[in-house]
Image (cartoon, rainbow, N blue to C red):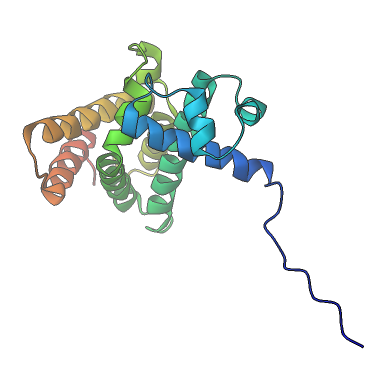
Length: 203
């Protein structure tokens, strides 16, 4: 008796919702980088993700909502990268943690500056609140506060200090990008880290 042929296992008809959502985000991100946000339509995104336009609306009510999701994903990945860098220094090693935070932020920004500029600055007006209240500043505030409590440096107003450091760091990196076609990352990290440590009187 001849055994019945084994039916080839094909690709699943449907994908998990989270995977489909990530594919839509990935497709939109690449299109935004290639064409710009304004020139990219929802039809373009759906086509690039190989789904029907109606499927797009199952995950995002609008292109603006998808852009917001891209921004959230970008920040979440950035925060995780910063947290892992600090954790690798070991507990209670405040100065290495600060150095790792600064280095990782600078390198992460340089690695993703084009994406950062597109999704945060291409279509959105200046937001004063967002510039002084965001998750990266919150993370730095916690680091400065904990380090000050441990006696590693002086930071009487951790929140205000974190805001000033964040903008100084952001400005320093932006200036380096504007002034040089080839950035000396090690020198840039050293200069900004030294500035921050001196401002904190880090011991």
